[in-house]
Image 1: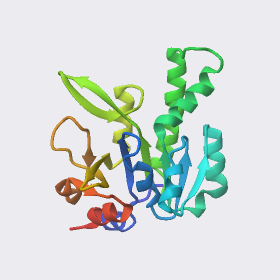
Image 2: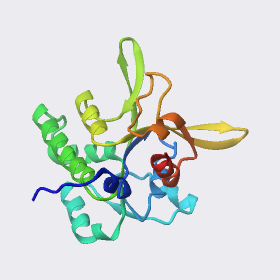
Image 3: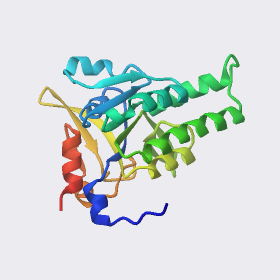
Image 4: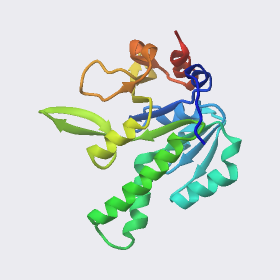
Length: 223
């Protein structure tokens, strides 16, 4: 049935759809743990860092689409947020399943694996939940400039993923007076780092120190 909604109502019930990427140890998983009433879908061992941080969040280990569907069917309604840590590793798991005992994936194998991944991403993009997709980082050369991008197979897939969300942020860490601090760049100053935000206050802020869900959400809601 066709349903007409008002933009004011959409704003009241807005759910964050976000991608973050960066090198290991830059606080991506820690950011995910701050999402409200979250379930973290773990595909690598990044959540082990949360034990030391004292985070209180549910985690489930998944390797396949069937496992993801099973978790959603049984437990999805209990949570307000879903965090995928990481999508980069999730694609590797999909490809291992597709390739099997063969040493190298074929073009068809990549097509199947990327199609499976796209199905997962679109499902959670459309969910009435806050969603965070975590990726590793890679560097690509464009017009003799090295640019940081999501670690995912192919620029087309990269662009598709970024199009599914409202925010793409780059995570990094720095030592400031012997203290480790994390930063989330949501509006890069140059083309060497890809970022995206559909929200004016986030773009104006550019960088969030020691980022957490509430900091991001408050800037989204700010007038």
